Length: 352
Image (cartoon, rainbow, N blue to C red):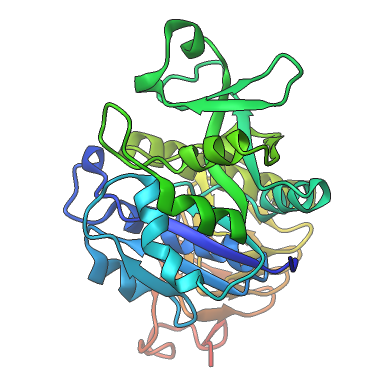
C-alpha cells in the first residue's frame, strides 16, 4: 500500500441546536466558516483528494468549497457509516490511507492528524483511532480496551452500560483507515443499534473481529477534538482559537495589553515590539510593523501599519498607514474615499 492520503470531511448535519436556518458547518469561527477551517487543515496534509459529504443546505455549503475539493450529497442522514458510504465511490481508485474529519470540529491541528498517520503507517494498522481523555465524557462514544491496553470496542453513549459510561477515554470520531479495509467493511455495516443508524465505529469492530490491528493515538490537547453543538460552544472555541493566536504573538515579542478584549485574525502578521491596545480588532491580510501602536478601540481590515505609526480609536479598511504617522481618534477610512479631502493624504494611502 502507498503512503498517499485522502481526506473525507463529514459535514451533512443540520445542527438543530444551533437554532439557525444556515447549515452548521457554515457558522464562522472567527472570520472563516468551520468547514473552511477544516479544509485548510486538511490541505496541510498534502492529500491526493479531499471529499466533503454535504447534506442539509448542500448548495450553500458547496458555494464555499474550493474548486479542488469534491462534494457528495448524503440525502438521508443515517449516521457516520452511511456518510462514508456516500463518499466511497469518489475513492474507488484510491490506494493509501483515508482520514475522516468533521466539518464542525474546527480546532483539530494538522500536527495531531500527522501523528495519527505516522502511527498508523508505522504499526501497519488497519485502522488508527484518535482518542482523548475527558473528565466529563458525557455524550461521546467510549473507547473500551482489553486488559493489556489493546483495542476491544467502541460503544456509543446511548448503547453503553453503566460501567462503560464511567470510562473517560472517548472516541473523537477521527480515524485513519487503510483504504482496503474501509472498502471491505463499509458495505457490511448494518443498523444494529437503538438509533437505526450505520455507525462508522462498527468498521473497527468488524476489522478487529477478523484479527486486523486497530491502534489508538491519545490527543495531547482534548480541546482539539471538541465539536460545535450550539452557539455557546462555538463562542467558546472561537475564544480559544483567538487566545492561541494572541499567545503566539506575545511569545514572539508583541505587546497585547488586554488579551480578553483583543481579536487578531490568523492571517494577521505583527512584528516584534509592536503594541496592541484594548478593544482592537484586526481582520484579513493585515501587517503591523515594529514600533507601531494600534488601539485602543481600533478596527483594521486588510491594512498595513508601518513602523512607528499610531492608530487610535479608528476604523480603517484596505489602507497603508505610513511610517510614524498618527491616525485618530475617530477616523473612518475605506476604499473610494477622498484622502486629500480628509486631510490624510500625507499619512495614508490605499493598497494597490
